[in-house]
Length: 445
Ligand code: GDP
Image (cartoon, rainbow, N blue to C red; front, side, top):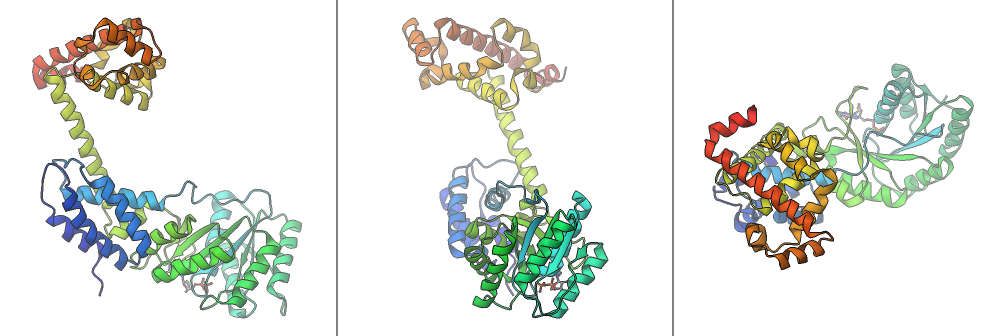
């Protein structure tokens, strides 16, 4: 039996010692194990290697937070990177089905779940998008497969193209196209024949069908349990036919999901849906978060990661608060605040959120401060030297001129910034003297 990836990882992470920061050596040791585990979870070697490299860079030197263990922290980094690799730019559930009748070509090996998935997607398009769908089976060598699609169609209330004995797949595809146009269908789905393994005859046939149908979407259906084989299948189909997406079936089983990661990394094609059972409803839009959790083998990974994130943010806020209490509010702090402001939707958006800021609104107005100015304020701070940022009092007239010029502004602009900084810094000091309790009170009120 393979050891669960989750067991492996937690074993590794438990050995990480609690220190100030994640050291390069610690991270390297942990990631060597993660790499082995990924390979065992059927992630291909080059993909695992790239993945580890990315995580190594992100993890090394990260401050260890107090309330999560280094292990949890590394899990979070590994998880985030998994999601990053798995996630494409596209919305996985949004199939290109404008310009009716839109053809969808379903391809894959026999037994992968192609016919079942065809019907599942038809049902979804019908129920969620109100589309009128026509399904056609092109599996002329297996009458049972054609029957199966007809039965599923009847079950979900979706039309299937009547079966005509002796017709070849290309002729069926043509007939489906005509029927879809005449019958006012939005989408027609072509369920191509499968084989037990990839062979030339199959590829030539699918290619011929593709050329006739000119599909908007070509979805490869693969058994998620077949690991590395699934990736090879995807590569082959993509090279020869050109796929627009992948559906991973049998994700309800206890496969380790490594195929998803390799598939995405190797083909660059998005995973669109996952099959989660034999029933017609057992199809879900691909969610990188969940699959990442699955690869890590931890059902509650998302909750864990969220908690880690919250904790990390809370600790950052607390560190800042401590500095303010000591009256340490230099230009770097101001820049940090300004950048936060930009991110959070400007002055108004931030007023209610920032410690003591509600009290300072008047002062900011007085200093001629508004959203448009934020960028320029940051530019001014950037023009200062490290020393000047830490201690702006040392600024002489000549330096002020240079800084203003460097940022494309007037000395008066810089003076306004300095005044604002002084006022904020004074206010911080006052709050600091009130002590933490007083500070909290003033924030709350
Ligand atoms: P095809 O040969 O590729 O068309 O495969 P089928 O659609 O006939 O599916 C083969 C078997 O796999 C059938 O018994 C399906 O019910 C089953 N199957 C398909 N998708 C899933 C899935 O996501 N989970 C599970 N557990 N079974 C599935």
